[in-house]
Length: 151
Image 1: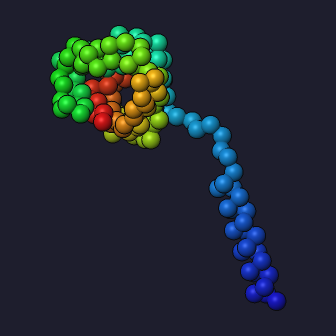
Image 2 (image 1 turned 90 degrees about the vertical axis):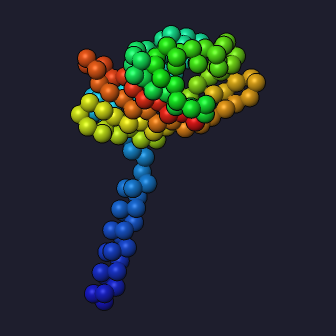
Image 3 (image 1 turned 180 degrees about the vertical axis):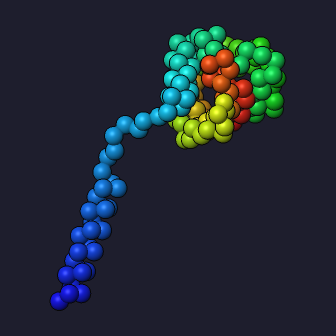
């Protein structure tokens, strides 16, 4: 009898624990750094979807030390990166509508974060997508992309 009651208790406890893990959770809370990075990426998405490459680039370090790695290899510098975007996406039809899906936003140290995610472009001439890894650095109180590896 005791073993049966113990079994029923363990079963009830297990079901309660399972119910708690499958219940939808509330909106996650982020620390101020992660929130700032997510806000910057949302602003970049908005700028891209409005066809505004200049505002999209506001999230990148405006320096020759910016590194962008894409399918054609590395590009060094803010202006070179912007020019590549202009060449690859000359109009809003080419740009399409951008969506970022963030898979991980990870602090590396106090002033650096790594972001892993997926990008998708919905376009009339065909949808494209890939993955990215961004390295952010906090410079003068502002989070900026210092390295972008997109495929």
